[in-house]
Image (cartoon, rainbow, N blue to C red):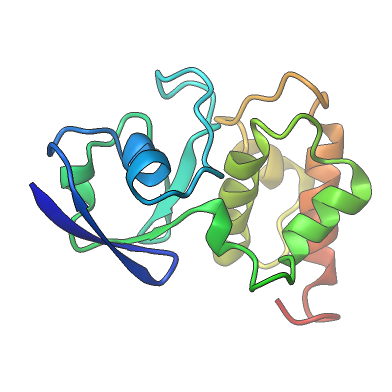
Length: 157
């Protein structure tokens, strides 16, 4: 089937089976390889993207379900070469290690900050509970999200 997907504000025309995973369409057909596959079962959060502003596991979502939706991948978080404050905080504070979970963590955190301007530590932990990391032990990730939230108002997103 032919679909026109709106990904990161751009239109992508694809001709794929309706049940092809969104993850595979993004990586193989749209050339957006920032979204990673971790478990392929919706348990780790590495494949998280935003669909109409809500985080979803793209490894579980067939492309037919995102027709007429706005999709945001990790490539859409930065503006050109300018990193988003979340990306800056992850880089500065060591929230990113091997990089497999990082795109999903960042997009989940972005969704949280879109809903809540100044989340507390418990809210950050709860928001990220569906994203697994085997490298950092989570502390640096949580600190990075809180630091990005604290910079709001001081520096424009």
